[in-house]
Amino acid sequence: MEDKMSLLKRLQAQRNDVLSKLKRIEDKKSSVSAEVYDKVRKEYADKLTGIDEQLSSHIDVVTEEIERLKAEEAEISKKMKETKFKMEEVELRYSIGEYDEASFKQVKAEDEALMQQFNEELKRTRDSIQYYSSFVKGKESQAAAPQPQPEPQPEPSVEPVKKETGLTIDEHILEEKLPEEEVALEELLSEEEALKPEAGAEGEQEPKVEQDKGVACPKCNHINTADSWYCEKCGAEILGASGS
Image (cartoon, rainbow, N blue to C red):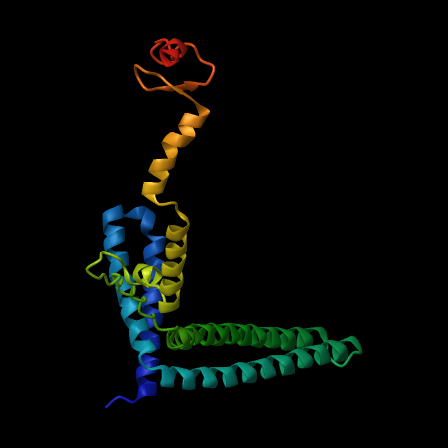
């Protein structure tokens, strides 16, 4: 059975191959029809997506590979630094006459080729680190993403309870009175009734008051002022009638 590291290497090789073919497809884009270009490009783009999905399912192996690549990056950087110092030393020794022209050019060319090789290896290593780190960051982002909370459901509205009187509970409470209030109200009403004059007495006094104020018309009984000669209402003679 293929171990995880071998699987990772195989997938990485497949991915590099697909990327290379996608680049060549782009280079040929202008020489083929749009339909053919879209069809072939989509085919390889789907392959690349499938490879990336397989890589993302082996995060533990990807993490180990990132650590290995970082160590490789450090080692390449160390070699580049040593080569740079060597080149400076050769330059210095050449300047003081330790190297002849031909020997200096040969050593310098070898060191420059070595530096070029280290630069290419360093770029590939850093690109791989960045590529594999994208899978780890993607997984961490998914794990850290907050789960969607269910939307709060609205509370059911409660209809106010009504009694037979048609009042709600709150209205009914307002309508109720304490026993002390009812007693005080009844006493107040009783006092008001006691202060009112009796109907019979009021009826007996009314004609007297009206009589004192004026003279009744003999025809329509309208009360006129005491010095009126004729009725203010019907115009009948008053004083003459009362004198007779």
